[in-house]
Length: 355
Image (cartoon, rainbow, N blue to C red; front, side, top):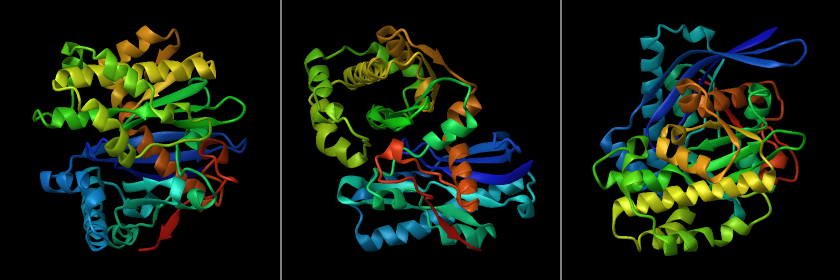
């Protein structure tokens, strides 16, 4: 049996911090993958970094280049702190798999950008880094997303017949026979943006959402957006939110009513997707799995069995999978599936940075 000790990094659109996980992946002689989580921790961003991340899409090219290096230093410092805290021997770590932080994602016109300089991380930690997983898929005509389906398929094969992740955006992956995967709708990103204005990091258990009033007219407009009629592989970015989604939801004055309407919108879009794909059971992860009101609204709109794993998997599944993508890259094996992204062919995505 071969094994790979990896550090996985995830900085998602929810912007709740940098998720770091130390995990060992094992592959048997029958080519079956297993993994063991050793340590995990989320490092919240300092307020100045968080504000810059929120405004990153508006930065100039020079400012982006500078911030890319600065974020690489932040990632490096957090990784070194993580290694020291958990007394990890650097020599045992094969590589760091880093998603980076997405600034721009416009695959339809051929580009995506994740910052958090891989060379900076490699140099300052002394560990090989694999990042920039999305770009090759976009060159191959894909959306560069979602990337987690290969992990769902190989690491969680018997958990359910489909996987739902509620992060900044909501995405689904069906692993039976042919892989089907795509972004469904917005998730925590707009919810968090609204509660941030109230001085909160997130809506704990969806309590504020549950107190709001549903705006039926706005809900109908959201559910009628053209994106939901797309048939091919599709993905969402913050540009779509700013241009299409927020101008509609901002017509509601009350933050609680905004939260309530968005929550119902998510629940309806998720349940509609379940019906279209004939989903029987779903494995639910991402921060939204802890939003009890949102989960209750999804359950109210569907009869699909919802399986919620332990909090470690809920919070760190993406960091685990991006660590796994680095393993597949180093093994020169496919880690990005055309069935999921709409690319012309499967690809081995990633860029290697040597210390």
